[in-house]
Structure formats: C-alpha cells, structure tokens
Length: 600
Image (tube, rainbow, N blue to C red; front, top):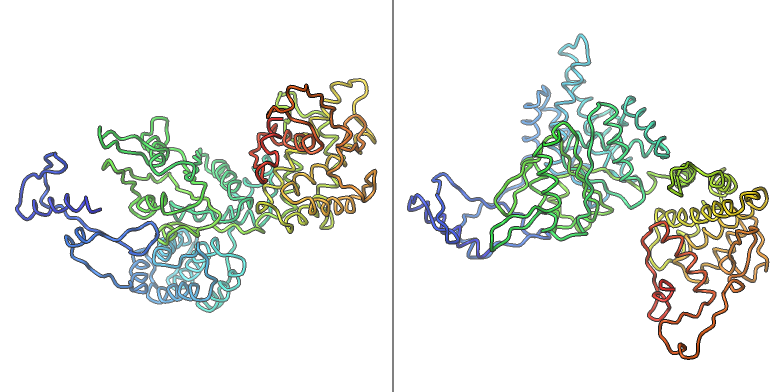
C-alpha cells in the first residue's frame, strides 16, 4: 500500500494542476478531471491491514456513525409500496434487536442492516404477489395483509439460519413484536412432490427436517445471490444442493449447472487469476474462467441456472476478494483492472462446516442456511446405505445387479436397518462415536468405510459363484458368511482408528448384540479371525499366515517383508478400501510398519 501512495499522489497533483495526462509506472495516462478516489475501511478485521501513514495523509478522514435503522427501514418499506411503513418499520427493527440480544452467539448469525435490507426488499415482492392472488382487495385489508407478509418474510429470512435452541426464542420474540403471529413453515407442494421423486431415484430418504432445509435453501437463493450452507460434514448440504437443482429444473424446465471448487486446494492466484508483472499478461484463475465462460454465453449459458459452489473453509485469505461480488455491486474486480459483473442467473454458494475464521464483512453479505446434526437421522443414513448398495452396479460391467449381491444384502438386512429403535449397525455406530479415536470420527466417514468393506464381501461372493457355477453360495453358507462378514466389516470400519483395548470392547459388544458365538469364546475378539468364503466359517488369522522362506544373503536386505498376522489382516482391510478408491490415512509412530504394509 505504501507504493500505491506514489501513484495516488501523482493523480492528485495532476488534478490540482488540471493536467491533461500524467506519468504512471513509466506510461503516459490520460487524466479525467472528474476522477475521485475514496477508501472505505473497517479497521481491525482479520485479513485487513491499516493504511500506512504516507497514504493516510493523502485522504481526509470521515468518521461514520451507526445508521438509523428505523428511518432506513421506513424509507425502504415506502419505496417497496408498503403503505403502513411507519408502524411496521418500528416493529421489524425491534424484532432484529431482540433477536440479537436474546439469541445465542453463533458465528453465522447476522442481524445487521444488510440482513434487514434483504428482508425489506423481499417483503415488497411478497406483498405484490399476495395482492395479485386476492380478489376484491379493499383498503381495510392493507394493514393486516402487510403485517402477515412481513411476518412470513421475517420467518423466511431468519428461520433458515437458526440453531435448534434459538427457534423457540424466535417464536416468543415474534409473538411479542407481532401479537398473535406464529412461525411459518415453508410450503411448496409442487416443488415438494418433484423433490420426493428425485430423492427416490437417488435412494435418499425424504425426512421432514431435511426437506424443510431444501425449501428454505430455495427461498434464501431467491432473496440473495450469495448463500452460505453451514453445518458439520455428513448432514446433507451437498445432497440438498444437488436435489434442489434437479427439482427446480423439473419445475420450470430451466437447466442448471453446478461448478464445485475447493478454495483451500489452491492459492489465491490459482483461484482468481494472476497478472504477470513483466509482460503485463493476465491469466485467469479457476473462478474467473468459469465466470468468463458464463458471461461469454457461447453455448446458451444465459438461459441456464449457474451455481458456483465453494466447498471448503471460509477464511479471509480468499473470501475477502469475494466481498464486492457478494454485495449489491455484484462485481469482481481483477488486478488487471478488468471488472466482471455477476449475471442474474448466477448464485455464489459457500459450503462450510464453521465460520470461525470468516470476517463479519463476508458473513453479513450472504444468506444463511444452517444444517444441524439432526437434519439427517442415523436411520435415514442406514436406509440410504442399504438401498444404494442394493442398486449399485458394483462390478461396473453393465450386466446388471448380480443375484449374489441381492442375496448377501437380504441376509444382513436385519443387522443394518433399524427396527424398534435398534439394529446391530445402529448400536455399533452409536458405541463407536462415543469412544476415543486417533482422529475425531464423523458418521459420514465411518459409514463410507463400512460401505467399502461390505462391497469387498459382495465381490468375494460373486467371484466364488463364478468359480463354482454348479454350486453357488446359498442357504446357510450364504447366511453365515453375510452375518460374519458384516461383523468383520463393522469392527474394522468403526473401530479401525481406535486402540486394541477399545477394539476388544467393541468386538464384545458386537458379539452380544448380534447373538454370534466365536470359536474360542471370550478369549479372542473378531479382529483375530477372518471369514472364509469357502464355507462361511471363522479361521484364525494366525493360521492363514504363509510360510516365508528367506535366502541367507537377503536376510539383511531392508526390503524383505516377513509376513505376520498383522501384515496379513491389515493388508486385507486396506485392499478393500483401496479397491473402492477411498483416501487413506495410516496413523502410527515411526517404525510401526506403515510403509511396509502398503508395499507388502
């Protein structure tokens, strides 16, 4: 910024002396007499720096005061055609003040002037829709209609971002400010029906909480062009976006495109572009190239919806550059001096698990939808897992679903799906999530690991049937194998990142809840046995370790691997995850054999 002061000083001197052109960076630049330079700043934000003294002296400082929200609200309501703006502006400002005072302190909450402005603008549109739908509308109905519309708009604006404990507080605040008012649930029967059809085709279960979140997301996307989906991983944020985009396409016939970017996988220059200081040549980044492609409209992009999704942590390093994109300017200013406008059919969506690092400037510019952990129940996740396995072409050869796959899943169905609040997998997951892991466990990660191991078991049955066409696996053989392989999969997927003592406790719990019996009783755990595909029986891992013959001159060689019980069983589990193309983290102290197991 200190270097910039020299250029600004040259511009200011040129204006004072009324010069036609000035010298900037060795180039002669034509100077317009009406040019003005202004700096707006919020000192103290993360990712911001104060102006250096040599730059500060070139500007006159003007201190801004807190805006009069009531007067601004009144003017905006009048401009939106709200006749009773004087009474309603006091109420809506009071509603926001009480929300800020009484609700819990959350990083994604924003009850500032920007949020208020969004509510007031959408209230005008809602009133016009309400008047069009009413026949024989009279002047006496105006106040009640406007109040109803404002309450409904307040619910649409505030409810999507609230955590569970603040919903009841908002209900009491709403009834205090607008006597007799109650919370409005999102209703759109036409879209809801389409969403349910899409969910069925994608094997998603349409829980009421999750459907409400999708309808809330739709509402927020209509009000704001910048939206944040906030909540822990595995609560249905990405799925909600996919389902809603397809649902809107079915509703209005307008095609939608989604571009997913991980902003933390690249630096700021790869995201927004870079200007070569020597050649002054501009190179687009990932975000700018997408935006430019939409603006070019070479393949009918103007007729489609475009959602640019930033799926990753929001921090000032990259997110601050989006501030002018997310506010009313809708402009991305590039270092090359070029300015790209955001078209009406583009939405900027930020998908994050928390906003601890985000600045208030970024948060206040976005609409918010909060996804809590109970948005998706564990029962819904397990049913989705079962039906997706039932309809997945595991072999990928296009020959359809093998009979062995259906038979395996039928045999272990009662262990997976929840009945009367319990199932073996349900209890195992709840047990695992309460134990200490080397890395904090999430429901999504545990279920993904379980799915990969179950697929490995299904593949083994399919291979067995192909090798024994006259005697395919069936009856008791199949039932035993399916149950025992499920227990094996549960142990390694849900407690693989735990200590051996926790694995033993977990194994004992699995044996009890499933009613199984191990060959050696309580002395050993499920981790000590492998499941033989030949007969569906247990066999000790120690009995399946191959005998290793090492030539005398290779004994001191560093790449010789002596197979042990641990290398055999770990290789088996790792093979299942790697064949499903799952990313892996092998965690352990130096010299514990991590690299050796992978190379073995």
